[in-house]
Image (cartoon, rainbow, N blue to C red; front, side, top):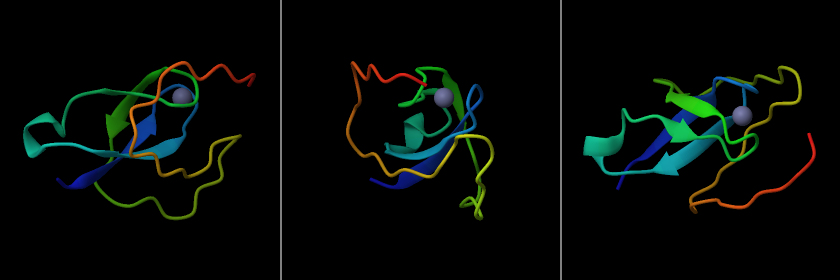
Amino acid sequence: MPVYPYQCDECGRFFDRKLPISQADAKQICPNCQGSAHRVFQAPSIIFKGGGFYVTDHRKTSGIAKDQ
Ligand SMILES: [Zn+2]
């Protein structure tokens, strides 16, 4: 399956998700803040906006309880 980059609408974090093509346009859940993340169509150039940073996360994350 291909890996797609997403960016969180809430905190701006980038992350990757490995998904079937049929699900690539679906909204994803941010692993950082559980916010809604949209697909981005190019690999992020180096963006260190706010506290966001690039992470690679192929696993389904759940129960991340980390203070901002
Ligand atoms: Zn977020």
